[in-house]
Image 1 (cartoon, one colour):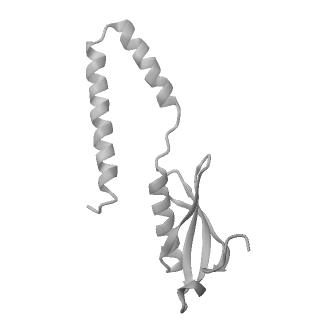
Image 2 (tube, one colour):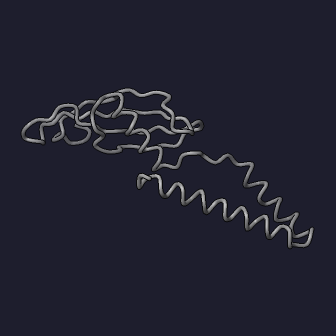
Length: 135
C-alpha cells in the first residue's frame, strides 16, 4: 500500500471505531440522555463533509496536471475550498534551462469536485523562475 494511502485507511478505521463506540454507548444510556446526544450528532451529520481533505485535493490536482501535461508538478501555489470542490494552483517547469534561474515555469489552475475528479484545468501564467512576484 503506498504511503499516502495509509493515513486514509487509518482515518477510516478510526471513524469505524468511533462509530462502534457511539452505538455501544447509545445502548447503555438512559433514553433522555441518548436523545440529547443523538440530536447533537444529527446536527453534525446534517453538515456536508468534503470527501477530500486539502492535502488529498492538492495531490490529486498535481497528478491530473502531470497526466495532462506530461510534466512533473513543482509545487502547490494556492488551495481554496469552493462550494462544490477545490480550486488548486499547481506550478510546473515547462522548460529546463541552464542556469536554473532561467527555467520557464507555468502555473495551472485546477478545479476538482469533492471526489477528486477533474472539473477543469487551465494554464494561467508563464514566467521565468528568477522573476520576482508582481514584476
